[in-house]
Each structure stands twice: as C-alpha cells, then as structure tokens.
Length: 183
Image (tube, rainbow, N blue to C red):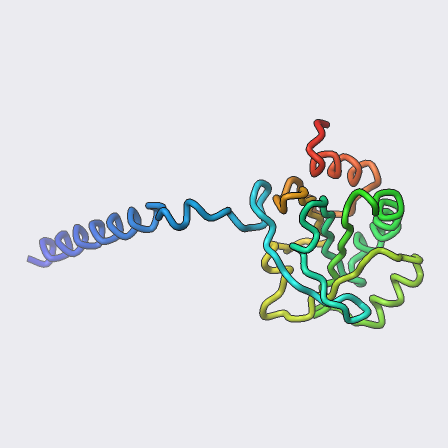
C-alpha cells in the first residue's frame, strides 16, 4: 500500500513537472516578437541612465547610431588601474568613432579614490556612477569580475565582451567587431 502511494505521488509529480516545464519553454508570440535584451553577445544591451561625475544624466540608448565601448571598473582593482591609461589612449584616438562610457561601481568604491585615480592618470574619458547596489547596472550586465568590457554596435547589440584588463590591440580588435568589420 505504502509503495503504491509513493508510486502514484511520483507519477503525479512527473506529470506536473512535465506540464509546467513544457508551458515555461513554449514561447509566446509576445515574447518571440520582442528583441532579446541581456548581457550576452548578440542581445540588445540593457538600457540604463546613470549620472556622470559632474551630476549629468546619461542614457545608454541616447548613443544609438554609434558604437559604444562600455567598461565597468573600481579604483581598488589592480587590473582596472592598469587599464585606465589604455582606455585613455583608446578614447583620445577613437572618441569621434565610438562612444566611450566607463562605469565606476561606486556602491563598492570611495568617491575620493575614484577622483584620485582619474586625476593621477589624467583621464578625460566619461565616467558614469553606478551608485545603487539594489538596482545596479553592474548586475544587469552580469558583471562579476572586473574590469569588464562590452562592445555594442550602432544598433545597440552587444558584439564583444571581455573580462580583465584590455590592451590597445584588444580594444581596437573589439572595436572592429562592433563596427562590423572582419578580424
């Protein structure tokens, strides 16, 4: 009797799991007509609005029509510090061809340290502040290792992604990908 009861319950659980699993995996027409938004290559980059160091609001989608280099960093990260001069050179060389936006993960950083490291490196590239840890842009982009870089094409689609410090060569190669050029 007990074995039979366990068998019946097991069958019911399997039927329920199969039914709900199939329903969850069946795409609705509404979902399939919408663009895929996410941080994976090939998806539309999640939109956001963040403040600059000067307090001005910047919205990612305002840069549509131009490729975007998006970089996440903190002042206490050794690889991020190493990368700042490379980003500055890239910015100076390409600022007319690509929007360079760096995002300081401010909720885990100190503003004085951010300003000091930028000053020490004579950095003039745009810095946005991700200050809200509960609704962070950092989380929306799936950033767990820093620095993290995304290259977004002129249509807002992520074309390349790197974790770790980038060199000039890497930056230029990823820009080519975002521009649609082959290798």
